[in-house]
Image (cartoon, rainbow, N blue to C red):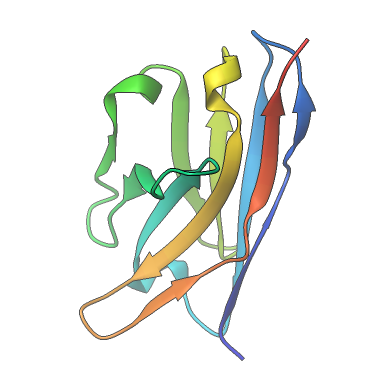
Length: 116
């Protein structure tokens, strides 16, 4: 069974850190462009970070650049999102995505709440 399972979300104070995990089964994270998206109520899901299958190229959207880091552990078949200096506007459900030209897989998401 092909699936992505996110974990690591929770409640954190502004300025704090969290590390999200995306554990893959039924696929190898090295074969896919792996991405993190987030979504807040009433808004479209937005892409925030990507790590390419080839060359470990990474990219981020503006609001998270310099604060978030995407990485991949090939042995664990897991992708991570390290989130530092969190802000209330980072509050969202975070989703993991695996994509090739022929297949796209989504996780069910993990909720991150940044609040004092």
